[in-house]
Image (tube, rainbow, N blue to C red):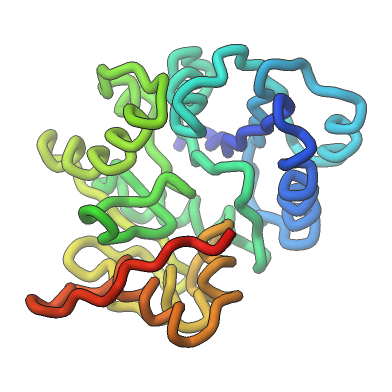
Length: 247
């Protein structure tokens, strides 16, 4: 099995906003190590790594890569990295993700090793808009990603990628699965486990992010609305108000 690279985007072009989330990412990697031999690729937006950034990632198995495009949100950076073809299998993360339990990397690698028929892995899914694997944590071979022909250069093309990637794999008869702490689940069982994204404590998720934080920090009424939007089967006739994300 080829070595896995974990990609994380580093918005040096908007550092005032993202310095704190990036520090949390690095600190949580140290506090909750992956327990597997992973390469960390920090994709630096429109800049070489600064001294502050190098110190922040000190001691982690990191390789810095510069990307001057800054187009297509996080998934645009993932697509352009795949075009470099210097890693074969990638776990794609964003700048606001962080770890809460040691062994997350081991769980990812075991999922891949024990399920060779699965070609697209995710850490969470949602039915918001349509059923899709969330771009906050997904994994695939770069050669499958390179088959996505549309260049991801805008918010619109990034959304088409996130909402369309699952069907893209289905059309090619390639299986997809979600990786939780309790194991790997394939359709139609993605939402059966408890404490997944926008459900209960969310502790079944390997990695948390901004939207899992929004859920956990909200009151019970708002959590119920978020859970209905993302996870429910949406019974015909039920149409609660779709909430706005709090500022």
